[in-house]
Image 1 (tube, rainbow, N blue to C red):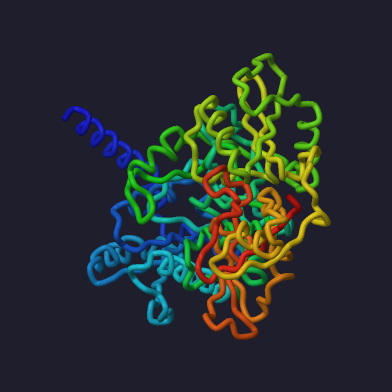
Image 2 (cartoon, helix red, strand yellow):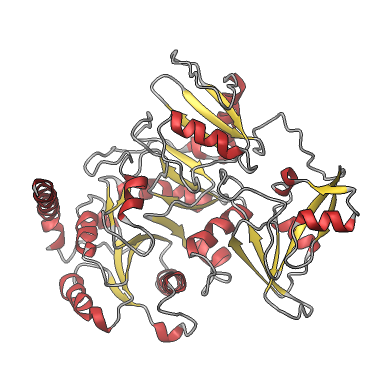
Length: 493
């Protein structure tokens, strides 16, 4: 009973503090400047009481005056009262209220949250990029809270996102920004994953790369699709070492209280801490960033993947070489995540070219995947001269395909599956000229045919894999699925 009262008191205290900090901003109808550069949209389905806290958290931020703020609603008859409350309270404050027109998206099924959210985002991007012509857009959800310099992060990284064509986005959330590590508040990093939870996209990226292929009826989540697109096209995102956003403690479509505790309870995050500036960001240029990692690996001695001895002498960085895509990689990762007291995630978004950096008070611990571009001691062939690459039949594993085609003389080589997992390789073996989609699954590499008759030209889904997954979605020669034809590397036994 005492714990419940204490929690209620803390929540009420937080709401009151947020209200005091933001009341002057909320009463100012001339808050927004007339700009076509910076915009923010809050996506809501009008079902959560968390909307109020999210907007309070946003409007207390000192840089809010530089942004046009929009609320985009996807409401139904049961929550019209929330829609009316939003209209009455925020009509004069935000730059505009948007209403998701479901009738324009006939393929949207209300019970399918994947499709609903994906179509809603498509509508928002069209409205703010194509119609209103904003140069940048920060997407937030209605269950987030923000650090004091959340908007400063986007203001200072916008020029980099606009110029650097190897970047897809800037995100405020770092999935491994945990309390036990010595992260710097003003340091940013490049990652090859998409973390979300408050992220910025440019109009140029939307119109030139994403608008024509955005999935309106995705098989998995729109964010899974975006991560797959990102990896296929070798695009990075910028994130802070210390997160500037966090989920409220509410259950959502894909977030339970148990999952919140696992992901966010140990996250290094402070509502009121901030920096004056993130400084010179030249170190985030891809060439400069790569040189820094290569220099770190040159001088850091290697440690056995199952070692329990970590040197604590100041300045002695270490590197640990681990297989990230092979089944035995899971054993090593579980060992090190236990040593470093990290909850084992389903997937890690913070990999950069197969490298993870963890700064401690004594040293930097560097994990290097064996298929990373920075791993110099590769034994795997990259020209595939020693392999026969074949296409399997439907619902046939690569083990079965290699055995049948070569009469038991060749076996599937699982280590090479990671290397041939690329659009260029798949497209050279399968005809996808009529259409192409990307889906994150563990079947890759291969093509999933949507046409039962396989009529030419065939529309196919290239099923891709998170190449930095650690054990959960390992490449396997034994995976198979109906309608799936796999690309298989076969090698002499």
